[in-house]
Amino acid sequence: FHDFEFPAASSSFGITQRETASTWKKPNDIAKTVNFGKYIDPNDFQPGTLSSPHFLSALSGIADFKQNKTIIEDQKTNSNGFYLIRLFVNSVWRYIAVDHFLPFIGGENAGVLSNIEGGETDLQGSLIEKAYAKSFGGYDSFARVQPREYYLRDLTGAPVKKYAITNLLISDSFDLQNIVKKALASGQVVQAVPTDKIAALGANPNFSYSVINYSSKGSLELRNSWELSNRDQKQVSKL
Image (cartoon, rainbow, N blue to C red):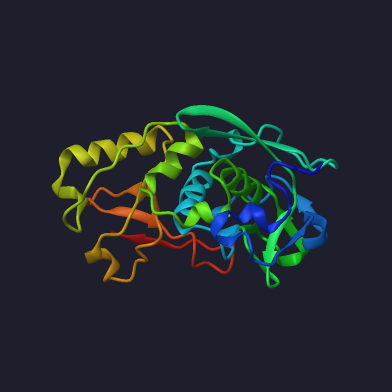
């Protein structure tokens, strides 16, 4: 299957990148073994040169809470290279058809790849990112400024609520404590965005961190999905 609406060509990068020289590879040209859903851990996402850390943070949060399997219609690879991705675009659920050709610029992956170490790769992250790029006019859409919570909404179809924490300890806000507890207990995706004060402690303000636990001492346990070299490691920071 060749998607002529969103071809394996530089025009699919969008208006700002359409003249950029590119190559597009089939998954079997990238890795010996192509998986689908085997590596759903967010640590396996390897951002591309055109990837958005905000988008991939949202996608990693969904993977943390095991909700990414609802996005792709058929959860297995196929020889035709045809896939349907379900996205909540402009407040309407849409099925976006994409092929399996993945972009490279100057030998480096332009879109996200998943776990190419050991001769294996996984298509989930790459195909979801490609479908989102197709929906919004090209891969350069990830460079546009938009609230990062929009990505969570577009990927899940769920309403997204945003709360501001003005100090380092969440324990000072009883209502917010209960909101976080209930959300985690019901399996909802909960993410934290570093403020300037927290970024000064070493957190990257470009990333969103998955909230995986709320401690009895009134602090959040955050997972950083982007600085792990070993997919079996756990890295949790308490805030």
